Length: 252
Length: 291
Image 1 (tube, rainbow over the protein chains, first blue to last red):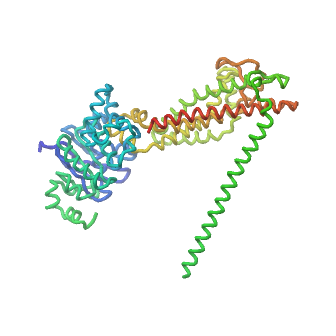
Image 2: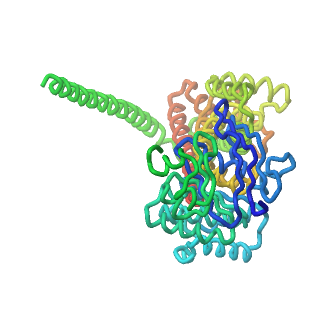
Image 3: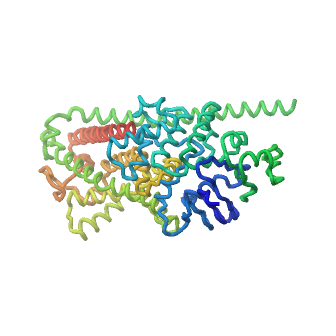
């Protein structure tokens, strides 16, 4: 399979003595939305945070295994994590805009990566906000605090902030769990649009969301990969009895 | 029935407890406000007649009607100003190191424990330390700089503790958001942590400096009870501070000097409030800009 963006080979993650991810092997496709699904505590969040090496900010975490992005092992000693995290953007479960203006939030990434020119910054901010489907709502108040926006708008500021550093992959950790249905629908529509340009990976424990918004689905259970395939096949024709039980709501 | 009754009793018992606590708190605040009011009344009643332009612009004198607080006022401003300049960057630096950079090991915990202990050391101990270290060993003599360094040692633990609290109150989600964009540790510290924690750090420093300007014991150890008839012009000049001058006047036998001491207290309070208002103003401006 040459058509793989992120190739995870034998990924293991521990937090202290707790073996959270066990020997995960999976190849994720470019320009698609992949949903990572499973019951609480199965390691979904740890899995996507392994793709931008954010787990290592947590005390007691230990990662063994390899994750290749475009054929390059991101756990290699030579890898620059700051550049890696620029290439792999992330949107968190709870909207976390910085307590700064909308403009400064989106411009934060470009600025730390060395963009100083005002004109260029404005172009990036406008482009990112348009991509995040927020420009029309905020173009006349870019200097207002991002904290004054609604939850759904805040989450789109966070998406624009992630897009502003021109990533290749966008990780989303339950991006809609703190939002109402209308805001959720907007973000889901956005995911489908973003996949044209980016590789999108979302964590969700909402099965309808996985079914609606994703092309591929990874099902994790107790730190192990149970099933991976196209969303259609996983939902209509699960290979594993465990997946079927989860999808039909017998546990979860 | 039985359970209903006992739960009713418990509820009324809780309400009674509530009322008792309310009364205790009220008594507490009345006692503290009342003693402050009496103190202020006493100082103003004794001091106001003496408080005039001549008092503010004169040097100490044997004759009460010619005595003034100029040397001590300027000395206090010098010492506290220099203390602020030295202690603020040191305190913030130490707090940032401990919270953001230091590895979490036994040595760091040992340092943290000792900072907390240092905050509780009596101020005269710092005075003796300053006398031995700055005045004698470093040969700074009884200068403003020696005094400022001593006060820095005294308030540094408090600034560090307050700054660490301010840093800790910056939500983890902000840091993670910045790291996820590829920020380095310094970029996260400067761009997110420092700008968020700055008002809190400033508050801690203001409170510490308010304590410093009123400190008498370590200042007597450093500056000694001297009779200064000039305005200090540089950090290596000899000096006196307002609390020393007030202490001095209180000790003199003539009744008039008690009025002078009260006037000195009023000046000290005004300078203190002035400093605090300026700092609060700066803090509020930063706070507004941060949001």
